Each structure stands twice: as structure tokens, then as C-alpha cells.
Length: 616
Ligand code: F6R
Image (cartoon, rainbow, N blue to C red; front, side, top):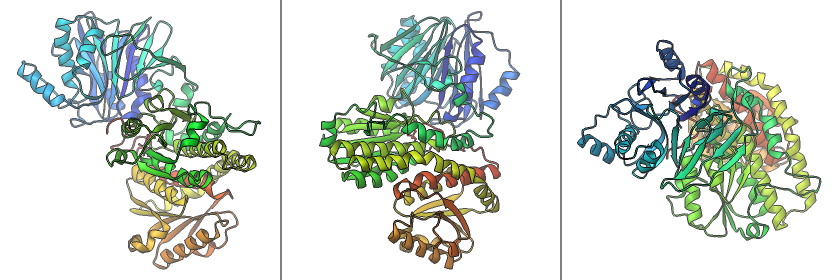
């Protein structure tokens, strides 16, 4: 939430910063702003505007900005203060010398604000951020170097923050600080960058540096200095980004989401790549937990938010079935507030595409305090959640830019399956040939997903037919149940429709009252091999159809039992039961994306949302 860019180098800073903000806009689009230190005036030149970056472009077209090679920028997801021009970042000191941009929440801002106002400062916005620039202004009277002054200010702040500062009297340096919110450094040749994530600078460099918790970084053209908040030198980790700028661009698609839906066969293949060799054994490169530690595990708790939690729900069925270890799935935001029973034998699995979701981060910290071992499943190299975990399985799905997760979801399920099979292998509860058979089925999945993409036209036509609908239901059983939840979530967040997913068995316990004439109901039918479940859901379809529902049935090739009761039939390739979510989700993603587009919504940046929810 909120995207931040900082630059010191030899290029036009405004161009670099605006380019970075465009690639970070998915993190928040309530307002945008830039600040350039102008040594000729000793003041900051700035521009900011509520709304998407296009509005800021409009302002910049009317404004003469200085040609500088240092600058910072911000794209906002509002927390404190309405999303208007006044609350947009950057925020400036009264003398116009300093500017700050911020991602996170300064929890003690009210106390600090009262203190600053009592000392005669005039605060212009309703944000928590603005206090920081006034504190820095006062601190610079005592502590002249920008990085020293920033360290002193950070000592006074509570909450979560990434802060980036520029000073018109020290224009050769940009200083950043982070606690609980993301900030990475990009190392270039005669230039350095700061960004909320690497997409901010991927156009210029793929060499990145992870910053740790409670660290301050000062960048100049040729140097990077990282310390803790007390000024002691801090260790950092450098890494090479394994994707390039084309992956972070639309590549001819109207929406990032369409591109990311289409990338799913590749994303799943990448998650599997190199993990199951000719040796017939699974190898997970960053599985830093020993076989003994994994044999010790007597309970698994999966924690995640939103779509990632639905990946966890799917995984629960497979992990319990393969390993016989009890597995719970819990929303990260609930987990640490309910006094869960965990100990050293509990394996907590955190699933997060971004690796920055605050609820999930706080939950893993809590789990580790309780001595549980934490393994994360993550798509973003260098992000906070994997860094704070005992082990990690990266999904390698490539950058996910659209706010609504698609390839992230599928690759998370695959990574969870790799974990389940790895546990089964280590604990000896599955024979090698059993693991081999499941891996062989997983390896065929990209082709099955590709087929769902190739047959997407049927779903797009359906979306056009249903463009006036106001309510859609989704039913599933077993692993089809989380698929139903995911289908409903996609529709809510993209098309702003009432949509609900149910376990089909629950229908008669309440939700069937929602069925009325013409209401569209998607039903995910388990493979026929699960005869009991398949038969039961066919009865459910008859029940809702008899009450007037328009049934849209997703069933595998050759399942003819459903044909008489399906108003629309979407065929799925025959895959093992546990793998069905990986093909059945795809038409639901296409449906939501298409319907949102037809309704004129911004598919990549739905209202009120942001990717990377870095506040609790
Ligand atoms: C929905 C969606 C969200 C995320 C959730 C967790 O389409 O994208 O529900 O899944 O905010 O995000 P990560 O996986 O980054 O922790």
C-alpha cells in the first residue's frame, strides 16, 4: 500500500521517479506526487494531485519543474485523511527545504502533532505523515546531516513506516527508513534507487539490496550506507532480480490482469521447475528446516489473507490427505488475537504473494514468539515475510501487478502441494512412485490451464449475457469449495457485485433462500472419480434449478450426469480431484475480468483496493 520511489544519479529525476510510480501505481492510486530538491532556490519543487497518476501528469504538464538528478515520489492508498490534494504526498517543511513520502501508519502521530502544534508548527494536512517532516526540520537544527537527523526522528516514531526524504540543501543524497513496511535499494552504475519494490527501478537495474527491519539507508550517486536506527552499520542482502522490465509491463494487453491470467501455464511451470529431478526426490532449495525438524511437526497451521487464504484452504485437503498431519487454515488477521495453541512442533505456513501483507507478517512474528517454526510461500524475492521465516518456497510466478491475484493463486496452490509432498517424502508416508504419479499429474497441468484459456470465449460470451445481473452465487464441495470462494471474491472486487461462495452441502442450511428466478449460480462439480461427492452436487444442481436458478456448471470431460441440469456447461480437462482447482479457477477469473471490463471498471485497480496491504 502506497508506492515510494527515490532516485540519485545522472538522469532526469522527474522522468525516473514518474516511471517508477507508474509501475508502483498498483500499490495505491488515491493520489500521486513528486518532490525534487532544487539547490538553486534551496527549496523543494513539488507537484501532487488526488486520483490516479494521470491527474498528476496533467498538473506536471502545466508546471515548470527544475532539471534535477535527485527526486522522490509517492502514489497513495489513503489511511489517515481523505484522498484529496491536501493529503497527497509529498509533505513539506514550512521553509520548503524538506520533503517526505511515507507508506504505513505512524501510530503515535496524534501525540506528536499536539507537541508540534504547541511548539508553533502549522500542519496543513490531516495525515499522520506530516508530523515526520516537521520533526525532521527541528532535528536538523541540532543534527545537520540528513541521515543522522532521520535516525533521530525514527527513534520517536511508533507504528509501521517506510519513509523517504529529500533535502534541498543536501541534494546529493536521498535517505530512506523502514520499519514493518517495504523498501528495497536498486544499485546502478553512477545512480542508486529506492523503491517499495524492485519494479520501481527494474527498467534501470536488476541488482537489488534487501533492507532489514529498523534500518536507515542513505543513497548518493555512487554509494549506499545502511545503519540501524542507532547509527550502527547494518548487514544487508544483495540479490539479482530474475525477471526484467518486460515482465512488469502490459505487453500489448489491455489490462495486467488479462496478461497475468494468460501467464498462468508458465507461472505454474515455473513453480514446479527444478524441484523434482531425475533422482525421483523433491528438492526445495530454501527449505532451511532439517528433515528431523519436519519429522517433528505434529500440526500445520496455514495463515494468509484473501485469495492466498483460499489457496491455503485448497492445500489443507491435499496436505492432510498426503501427510496425515492435522492442518488448519486461518485468516492471518484472526490468528494472533485468539490465543492459538502452538508450540515447537507446530509448522506455521504463511502464504503471501507480496510477502508484505501486514496481517500475515504480524501473525508469523507472533507464531515465532510462541516458538513455532514458520515456512512462507511467497512470490516476491527479498520481501519481509520470507526474510522473517525459517524456510521459504518461492513461487517464481513473475511480478503480479493487477490488484486482483490470479497467477499468484494458482502458483501458491502448487507450492503448497510441493510442500505437502515434500513432507510426505521426508516422513516416509508416501512411496516414491506415489509422489512420482502426483508430480507427473502436476507437470501436465500447464497444458490443462492453457486449454481453459483457449476456451475462454465461451465465458466471455456468458459475461456479456449476464452484464445486468446484480448477484451471483458460487457452489463447490471439497477442493471446489475454496474455488467457489475465490470465484465470488474476484467478482466482488472487480465487478462490485454481490457474490457469495458456499460449500454446496450447506445450501439447505440457509443459502438456498437466496435462490430466485434467474439468479446465476456457478457450480464446480468434482471429478466423477469422487462418485459420492459428484452425485451429491448433481442433486444440489437439480435443487437450485428447480427453484429458478440459472445454472453454470463446471464439470470434467465425459461427466454427462450434469448435462440435463446445466443451462451453461463449462468443460474442464480430466485431472485428479486435488488438482481440479488449478483448472476450474481459470474460467471464474476470466468471467470476473470480462464482466468488470464490460461494466466499465478499472480491472487492474479496483476501487478502494490496493495490492500489498501493508497496514493492519
Ligand atoms: C484478491 C487479492 C487479495 C490478496 C490478499 C493477500 O484478489 O489479491 O485478497 O490475496 O490481500 O495478499 P498477499 O498474497 O500479497 O499476502
